[in-house]
Image (cartoon, rainbow, N blue to C red; front, side, top):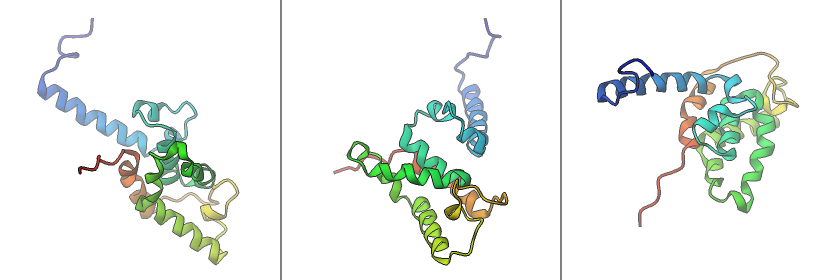
Length: 148
């Protein structure tokens, strides 16, 4: 049996645990290793499907962008009609436009859009990348149902 109080439903205890769980989840979601894990543990825990995994990785893991981009194009298929909205999120479109601008310039060998595996030559975590990670939860969750 667990110690007394560990499995309680006291509102204060539940609220404190909720805050701690949120901290753990935020830390895990900021780790590229956790996001790229093959067993998809964090994604399964969050009950997110493959479209959310692919778009989430595209946003939050720069080294995975080139590969994720190929897979993201499949979200246009009819079977993913409920998930295609993810492609129109501002964070995704901003990253895609940035990639297109870099391709057009043709002078940035370290940019994700020009790398065969999406791997930068030098590690970096810019303010833009931080912004993309922190706003990614908006794209990972389904939009609210429209009221008529």
